[in-house]
Length: 187
Image (cartoon, rainbow, N blue to C red; front, side, top):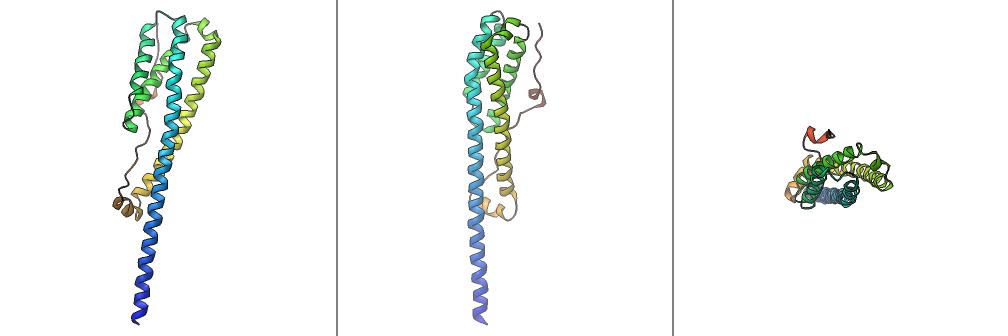
């Protein structure tokens, strides 16, 4: 009878140990997917940021007196380059840049020669493509965050996450409904 209790306890200890190992490895994998997904967003945001000076230069040639809009885009891009501390800060900065770019594209509507320019059309098409890529990367990142956060908050993996220092990841979201709207440009 004594051996059977020892076997049961041993099986329980080994089972618990295996669960901890599997839960830990699952949490590590989820954290790595979240990091990979953030890297994908970062690449797309960098592509957009690199496109901005070219777009501004093309618009400058046609709309030289629209310096306020052009300066806003340039200043906003410069501020985005310095952001990277947290997902929330980066999301807010990128939302401001997106709004400034929307204003720049809306400005082009008032300049038929600019809209007809092949350079502008090419840059605008690139910007559209990058914006779609950012949306896809953001959805992938937020999905990876959801998986990680679910593992961190679900029982019993929550116990393993707390023991080994796994925390919740931050979603990449726009800050406010105002930032979600395309800004209007009036003359």
